[in-house]
Image (cartoon, rainbow, N blue to C red; front, top):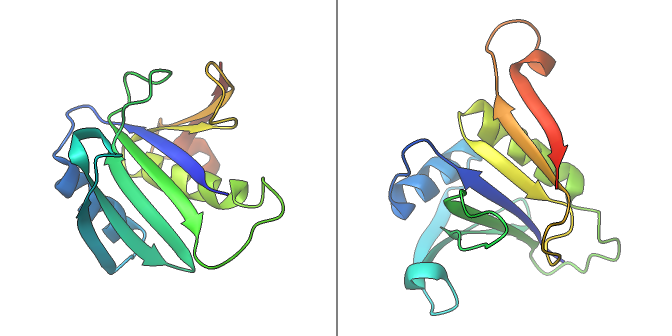
Length: 139
């Protein structure tokens, strides 16, 4: 069981710079670059923290063509019986990324083309924390 986030930026940085920003934001100190033909452009970054593996790569999702990066989160050595058990965690991660200025899409059904997504964007820095974000569903 894994969960996914897709990230859109106004001017996309290189993968390394983006990955380092994300790992810093989530306080993941243990991370490294890897190479694999399974990832767009043959590389990805991987980090571990809180019993999770976080992989970051270039996005190549046809359903989200305007999104530049893909973040995949998978438990380490833990079996997840409930497929929605990581949804709350991914929601918190998406909110942190949006507050940091990224546009985030969290697919609720990753394997389905055209499935429902939750979209997160920062709209303000005034008022209460709930007022700082625009969160909506999209098909």
